[in-house]
Length: 454
Image 1 (cartoon, rainbow, N blue to C red):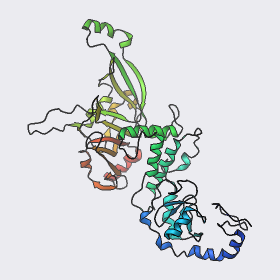
Image 2 (cartoon, one colour; image 1 turned 60 degrees about the vertical axis):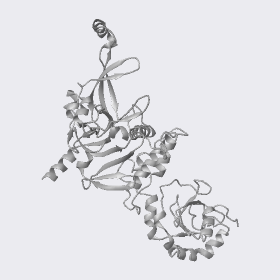
Image 3 (cartoon, rainbow, N blue to C red; image 1 turned 90 degrees about the horizontal axis):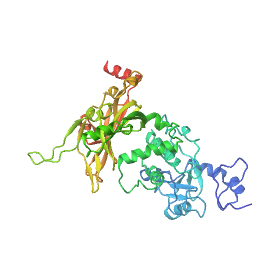
Image 4 (tube, helix red, strand yellow; image 1 turned 60 degrees about the horizontal axis):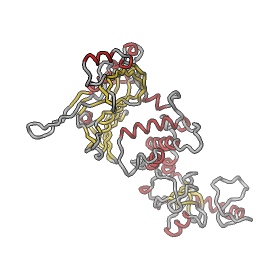
């Protein structure tokens, strides 16, 4: 009878050889069957499991060999090791340190080493839940939505979709035994897929990342300019852009008038899509007030939204030419993202505009920013704020905070790293908002609000 040199993860059929390292398999099944079953149900080492050190969000990689193959997690110290055979790193670890309970990160079965028997105990179900979270209702929570998408050979971008889906499932898992979820594997995928444009050790710009991330997910899901994905369906709107070329400023009025008659200087219109709207802040004051303090200006949200009313013109300068542009929205998405442009770059440094934007939390109607023919078709144009990203501190440094709405209770929470606190809605409007996410009201939302009002 052959001596087994490598373990197999597949369960053997009845009567087949049971492959145990260094033990003739049929003899092992005959002589150890009852003993193994008994130990499986009554493992004496279950009380050594330390749930506080367990974190299944890290990459499934052996801490010694750095291999992805056949990796086990030690449930006593939280480290990952390869194999469970006699000469495997997991077995050596159990003998040297006295840690006996291990979880196979692929099959999600529990084993006792070095005795090498499977542990069957219902008290371990919460650990399994972290590694194998059942899919929920969201697109990325339901892996069936994207698992069959075909990508070119060698394409790594789909890894971003997989890791994002895993993170969503962990966040929504009702049986988590930890109060937080680590995005480590997701961040590793971002570093790899962005070709180190975004890194774990270096703070990046939130808008740069958001723009890249949405487009990367769209492309990884098989989308392009013609083919839609969940990203288009949720965030994409459309607008008309009216562009008019300006004559050089050093010309005489007569010369300018002649140029304006030419076709090149006539106003043109193009249709364009967007995933977020850029809102420009008014220029911050340069001088201090009488108390020698800088005045922090404030501006209503609707003032900076006027950019998209189809009337307001703004001058855009290039190296050689100047243009006047105006914008008008033609389609509003279910979820609308505002990017409040706080940072401007010049040849020497980056400046931050500290202007506070005054905005209501709910009931923002954008109907007036739609073209007239679209207004009659667009039934729902009212939005409520559900997320607010804030940048505190100097440009290129500082820190980010996030305000999120809990839909079940209607309460707002502020998140910064691992800190989560309640926050009053009135306090959100006093922050230096950088990115905002608004949810469009539908018929179901309107009826729910009327019921609450009643």
